[in-house]
Length: 512
Image 1 (tube, helix red, strand yellow):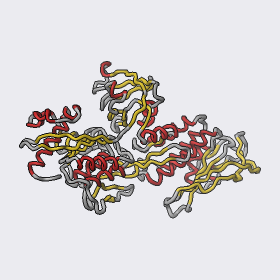
Image 2 (cartoon, rainbow, N blue to C red; image 1 turned 30 degrees about the vertical axis):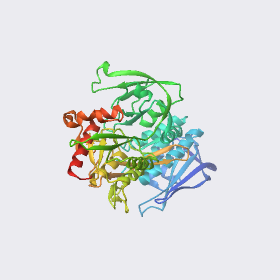
Image 3 (cartoon, one colour; image 1 turned 45 degrees about the vertical axis):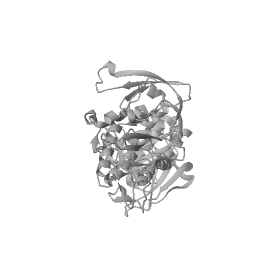
Image 4 (cartoon, rainbow, N blue to C red; image 1 turned 180 degrees about the vertical axis):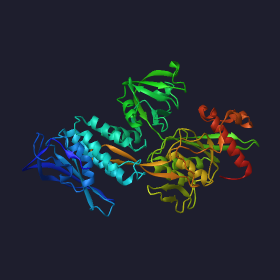
């Protein structure tokens, strides 16, 4: 049954209202027109005239306006905006126009346009074409109507956050212009903050510490991997994503921030919660560090192991690693340990570039699966490894995303042995798009499988060897005196296990 529009009267006198017209073609998105058009004047006074049926509004598609009409009609003399979208159904016109009320608050109106832009990108690229089994077009209409009475950009952004949360994917999100600037500053390698890497744990939604920058205020305060952030400056973090939380932690060097943390599994115990006051400092983020670890094999040979720790996949990660390996090759290194523990990921391309430093030929690096279920392998082309020396890769619960892509590529192609603990399990790839208002939209656009077609999402990668203390009863333990590397490396049980695995490969005369 058609909905009626109560308390509306339409006069014959036309008025000019603002119209935004967006076309989202399936191959190219762009604004096609912005101008003024004549539409019937709408007033809110009660009339004895026959009520206007919502379908009589001049909108191209009757079914869509029927659903939005219930929301639009409550706003008297409101300017209407319209969006044109491409339609896949041959029964409909090539483009489709949907009306919504334009806020008279300038900053809210700006966010409305951002919503349209974000909605269109998700409509075209989101990994789930069912949009979590909901009507995505209707979701836009409902959110636009909810935005209309708002008076602040923050409140309007919250509506976008709410709309994106219905997709059921914690990695598809929007961050404000201010948050995006902080995100970019952090990616460039310098920020002012406390030195914590955090992420949302998908199963619980809690904000979890992945790692702390060595020597940072967070590290000095004893904050550890796995601690959960509960409050920042007394504000609860329920429902807040990792970028919003990171923004609260960042700030001008010399200021302080108070964080409340939970450690352990007993949420009912007061002893599992603690508050820490942290000074903000200039944090220099170097994604790569290296060292040479000399050691003797069980049969008495003196070897040099190159240790490379990669903390994030930045734009310079591959170049920095290649330079480090060349330097260590010149110093006579015989084997390598690549440490990806607590590396939360970063640029997928950087992960693939790092993989090519270690691999030869036309190996498959990763398999991607698009929204239609089509699988596309990403292969090397005539690759030439920088070194063929034996390689062990260290991973743990904090190794995620691009770290898992790299670990999977090296392991499944027989290049490396994995030592440590099962990885985080993030088998999705996001695109990041800067929107016109300076905000940024993160969209999950693909899933991936390892070269051996292992599904990593919410499962992770199991190592070949776990680094438990039971495995340290070997001659390696007596060789610590021969090491000249950093004491923290000497005491690292996983590195000792990795060296043991390299000794096994050396004794077999094989390279990974």
